Image 1: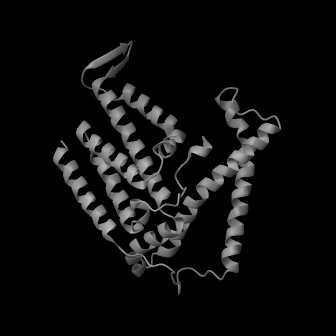
Image 2 (image 1 turned 135 degrees about the vertical axis):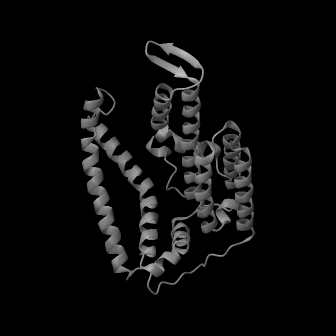
Length: 265
């Protein structure tokens, strides 16, 4: 499962999404996330699903690889589905067992919430898969630039978010190595009840925290040794420029807003 986390990964390429400006992609994903929560019927969700599939095709990445990003959260999605099925009431009663009932509104809400989670995770993965950490940092910094005039540390915020995304696959790889090392020493992470499994995670958590702090310290020392002093006086080798791709992304955003607004009930 640890190898299936796509968020934070970057796959170099020359596709339409790879060459688009990171600022337009960041703005679009914010708009898309808003539309995901505004969608409230089968037609609007079908439009969002179709657009997500189309975006994946534009990225020229393997569909199966991107869908793997859903595997680490399938338990959360399943828990959400079960929770809404048994708690949300209303409409036709499909099944009844004692005081528990499965009703139309519960099933409807469970389906819609699971679709929301899936779409948000897929689009977040698509953003990091097609945008390098450097471009993502610069794009975020440029978008937050106006807040710097009121004292907000824009560069530091963008840098921290970029480092956090970059460290996700690194920490996952480190976790996988620790699990394999502990398993080779006889540790068992699969048997026993929930409490026992939680206790068995301690031999993983402690080395992982130590490794994370060590990597953070090494990164800080490396940045200091290279004379890093924040965004003051910082120059850029490649400057961001909007192109015709970003114009098409803007048109797609407007069309998507109009479609969801028209079919939303």
